Amino acid sequence: MSAEAAAERWLGLMDETVAEAFATMLGIECVPACATAASPRNTAAHVRFYGALDGECILLFAAVDAEKLTRMLLGEAPDDAMIGDAVGELCNVLAGGWKRRLRPPASGANLSVPTVKRGELDPPDDVRGYQFNDAQFAVGLTVVAIAED
Amino acid sequence: MKVLIVDDSALMRKLVARALREAGLPLDEIIEAGNGVEGIAVLERLAACEQAPGLILCDVHMPVLDGVGFLRRRAALGLATAPVLMVTADASDPMVAEALSAGASGSIAKPFSVDQIREKALALAVFA
Image (tube, rainbow over all chains, first blue to last red; front, side):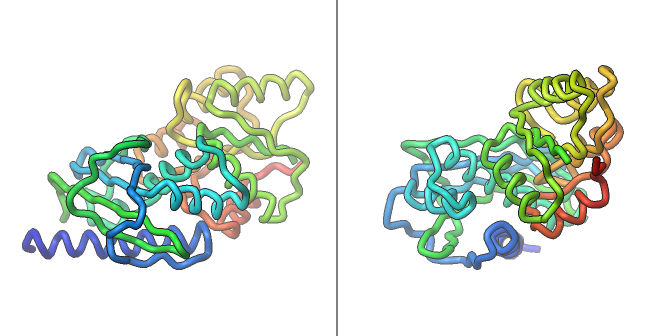
């Protein structure tokens, strides 16, 4: 499989993972969208893959959209700590769900715990945008090495 | 029934608690702990009053004392009476298998639905 075809497959698996996560957690649709943001994305979560898969998954949110996500999850106005928790948990869920969809042995690779960073970010060049309700976020997937049957 | 939720994420504790309530389980009290050490302290406090939770939902990766450490310490202290459901975003995490060896009764993958929580909780919980 060419590198382009592999990258396209991985993005398709992330689309499935995002759709499943939002349907299960919030009962709403979340679909791929143009990866441009009206507001600067200044809230990020990061999970690293290691073992049979070497790479990382990064989520990028504008602060206003991270607040919307958290409010939808909790059903109440969130504080700052909850917003960081929500973006980190979503990154964890998406990284775990995406990895599970890979073929073994990559599907059995390990995940780091999510880390959350806020403020000025250095986002990856290539990200996939997603939209839910009136909010959006971006996912950056980096695969350095992968072992799949 | 008392339920103990052990998770370092305050958001996850709230989401798990809400799912348990929405699942319609007969809950007397939901007790939250932010890591394994706090979870052990809750079990000790309950044991001192001859009480125990009917179910524990426990995160795998936590600071201070993780899920596996929590399971081992509660066993060492003779507090391993309640079934433990591990909550994880990665069902293939080797630490989940380690947790099952250390006394966990099962696991549930995030994201989970209310129906999934209900099914797992009803299968495992000890109703007083």
